[in-house]
Amino acid sequence: MRIAVTGGKGGTGKSMVATALAVELAKNHKVLLADLDVDCPDDHLILSIERRKEKDVMLEVPELIEEKCIKCGKCAEVCRENAVLFQKEKGPSFMLEQCTACTACMIACPVGAIGRKSIRAGKIYLGSGYGLDFISGELEPGQKESSPIVNATKEVIAHKEDNYDFIIVDTAAGTHCSVIAAVRGCSVALPVAEPTPMGSHDLNLILELLHELKIPAEGVLNKEGIGNRKLAEDVFEEHHVEICSIIPYKREIAELYSRGIPIEDESIKALAKKVQGWKK
Ligand code: SF4
Ligand code: SF4
Image (cartoon, rainbow, N blue to C red; front, side, top):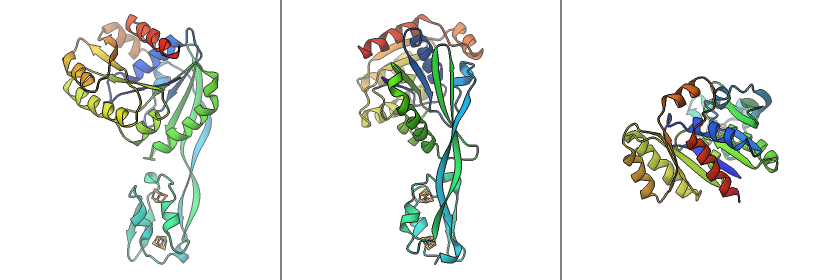
């Protein structure tokens, strides 16, 4: 069973919940923790897991064959990522850090003036610790398109899926393409919210996205005790999403987290129990 731990806003405690839930579940089950926040993966740091590189993620990106180019500009017209800068006199320039290797420009070029070259866009790492297996994707410095790395990491996960009772997917914050790529294929999502005005605004966005993607959601209200709990509760209620876990704001939790130790709290144990029930 694949479960996404996600959240509209950064800093809600998404990675803390994902790592603590995975460690708790791993006491009785086979668990793979997948860090798909590929722009800034940090679950291995939270759990002090030493990663080893499994493979590079290569992308086949466009390369101009200048002598063939007739400077028609069609490649720039079809590029949805604005990765082609076209100037009438100079012709096209490809900004590869923005390219998703979709091949649209290659198909659109009327004279076959766009070839391909392979670049490293990211890496996939494996590791283990606290009784669980771990995988994470990581975007190459300078690259901007994170979805291809998420998708490449998901391909590796798909080959291992049958070995595990639970795959806990920690997504990036927000509602952009790489979050969509990460939550797709999950049976349930746990959107983590904090009881603040900004947290509620972004919670609304992630719940809308999960609804669009038809992924059932159960809410986690983190840092209960700060801010105004009702703000988040109202948003969950508007979207008909039950709150399945409330994690209190406690000094001990923050201390464990900052020391790279997965948090032990009754609220996490209760969440794990609930999640185990979904598998039956
Ligand atoms: S491969 Fe796709 S994203 Fe990359 S430059 Fe061509 S059209 Fe743009
Ligand atoms: S579509 Fe082909 S020919 Fe036209 S500008 Fe782009 S590379 Fe040159």
